[in-house]
Length: 269
Image 1 (tube, rainbow, N blue to C red):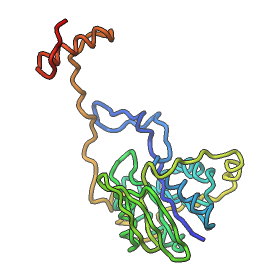
Image 2: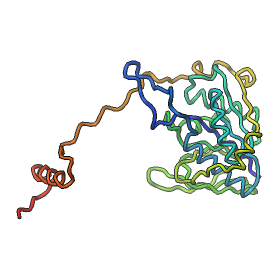
Image 3: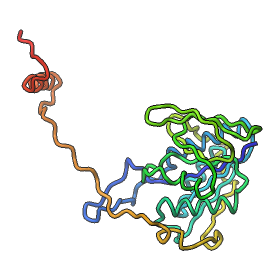
């Protein structure tokens, strides 16, 4: 059996995000929220491991009450239970404060884990730091950029392939361990009707700061040594030099431009 914790985050759909031109803040109103894509890959991998070896999968998240929707989606995929850390004290946390909060919850409620799986990155922040910092808080090994996982429960080890700077590394490491997984590892399943119905009966435990305990100065904004000073969109790309909209005329115009720059030799008929 392999007991697995999957850390997930509810994020805004970045395709729908806009930035207020006056305040430079991200406008979240009316923007749909989704389960972070890399985290869904982590959920799928946990399910495949459980199907092969048995065990229990707990989903762990930190966020506002509406993040329950993301946890229900993970439960409807076939996971067993979920814990939501939700308190205003946890708000505005950077990756370090987030990792401290998640690691404390793991120590208190699910310290019998074999694997912790996190997405490589969250699409709303793109830091790729939280999973690694959780491992450091728990003082366990971690492997990042994982694209293939083999688990050997009897031998208390994993063998993973990870992608680093265009190269593939194969590494053997002991259990317990934290893995951060990335696109290409698998294709997450869609929940079926039976699991959707079953998910409504599964437990989501909501934990606040008082129940979690620990050093309150390490939670949320107080525990965050970094913060976002300003958010702004990238500068618009300059307009192209080809002005014609018709394909044949555009090609002719492009040939003339390249010939003028002496990048090609224009053939004279």
